[in-house]
Amino acid sequence: MPMDGKIRRAGPADADNIAALVNHAFLAESWFKSGDRTNPEQVRALLGKGVFLLLEEAAQLMACVYLESRGDRLYLGMLSVGQKVQGRGLGRRMMQEAEDFARRAGHVAIDLRIVHVREELPPYYRKLGFVEAGTEPAPDFPGVKIPIHFVLMSKSLQA
Image (cartoon, rainbow, N blue to C red; front, side, top):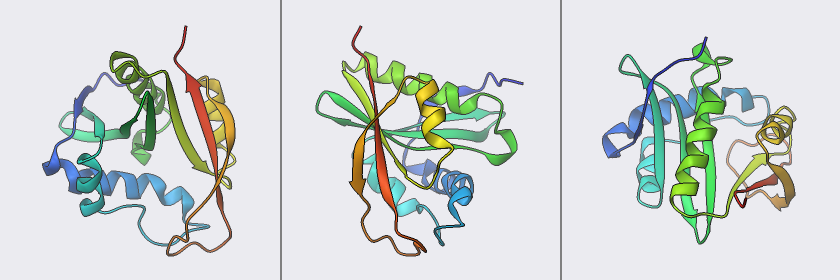
C-alpha cells in the first residue's frame, strides 16, 4: 500500500530522527559491520554540505535520502526506509524525488555507491536506470568484519 506522505527538506533539528532511521534501516549490514551507520553529529555535518529529503506520514519519519551536489552531478547516499514500511514503494518514491531534485538543479547525472556484499542492491538500482560505473576501495571503517569495497553506480539524466 503506497503512502502519500509529505516530502520536505531536513533541518539540523531533524538530525536525531534521521540518524535513528538510517541506523535502523542499515541493520541489514550488521552481518558484515558492527556499530551504527551514522550519528546526529555526522548528519548535521552532512547538512552543511548537502540536503536530506524526508518523507513523513502522520508526523512520523518514514524514509530519507541524502543528496549532495558535486559539480554537475548529484551524489546520493543513505537511502533509508523504516523497516515497518518497507515494501510499500517508499524507496522508489525517494529515488524519484532525488531525480526530480537533480533535474531542477541542472545536474546531468546521479551517482551512488554501495557496498559490494549487498548483492540485493545492484538489481534494485538497475531497475531505476542506474548502471555500474566501476569500483572504489572502502576506507577502514570501524566495525567492519570482512574486506569490503564499493560498487559505483550512475544514472544519466540527459535526454
